[in-house]
Length: 622
Image (cartoon, rainbow, N blue to C red; front, side, top):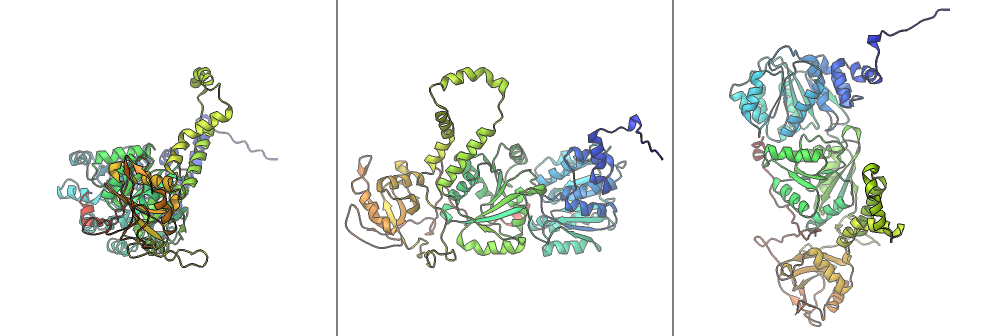
């Protein structure tokens, strides 16, 4: 019998954590121990598919490379780790250039590479981007750098100052290549790459592969190794896509109701323009939400402050433009909300990729009007996944969801026994005349009452449109030329904002005096000394009857039928029961759509008429 005895020398003994590092699968890909130790501390346990497939190829250093994968799949590590293996950090000249579209992404890549390299000596990584001091960036370059991470505009500025030499660059990485081209950086990229050696290796990473990206690959690469994770241009399989159809005037109210129906939401809301972004954020703040905006007109200091608050989760909603949101890498984003659909279909992929990162799940929501259904179908073809048509929740649904979210929060709160103990006698004395049921009811009501009050008589915000499945064999709801449903009548009331009414107040006032349901009240437009509102044709008589002898602050309330709505036209009878000619017009005679109500009385307007930001204007900021 043969006996084998295995021993470890004392100096080779391993703790469990060290043994885990030794077993980390990144070592099997060819990454050395000191870098693996660093990324293990960062939480890297297993490589993502793009990392697993690309790292062995890039480590050879002999191929141009095209990698197609969605945002949130770990592309930074896919090229960052091989760069740390391939570069000579005993030399202090630029050996690698990483180009990316935005400052946020530039800073993210820089910080990630520094974290990967924290156990490697003499690694110098410099971030070059607009909106920060160029003199500080020039000083860092002058001190010596091996990896430059840059946005194209600022990088070209430094090259034109002859402040950097790329003649010995070995590797160029084009990250988010599709977005750089979409932002109009084609000429800048051409100029930058013309200063690099012909024998360099170019690595291109992109979420989508439009023809422009294909052309740049042909221009700067020789027989590149192409790796596609999933089907080209498709979306993340872990994302659920939903759309809600609303009337334009109800978009903001519907948006808030969706947010309220998801009490634990931690999301990014996308808008087309910086103006829309700013105004939505201001309205949300006014209405009591933890929200802020991120767009190209903010200074770098302001952007950093907003992102710091968002990463720390002191912000619940980040309202952003497509350009500003590129490079946002925040964990556990639960929802992406498309307040406005992007002009370019491919941008939807980038937007939705902000959630469901690192293998987690998420929801991408689009709030649309009936005419945008065709765009939803186009997006479905691009991402290879069907949208789910969802219904805007009712006021009752929101209140119920908020109540049980509060109950869940109370049930799971962590109690600091040591700190609370000294207050228990006084607390018990305060509650001694209350039963257990009374205490539970009162705690629940602290937050619940606010939603009950706000959503009392809340109208149905789901828009009816022609191809919506009809009930009882009907062909769906029909609309007249003004956009109002033909089964509704538009009424005038001599109360308005000077009487301190907002839409929500007026809705409650109408329902309380007429005993009709808020669901049968349509569009409400509050003016200065008067307002318009729509009601079901079946409820018109109830409205006139309800207001027959009502006065407000000493004056009689008058109801009249407006002349520009739909529905039946009847005259005479009752108090003020007559046809009112005209309607309301604003801005050159165009009908302006109003907004939804708000908790604090703020209204909101739809911004779909804003012109799309010009690409040239967008790229000037980077």
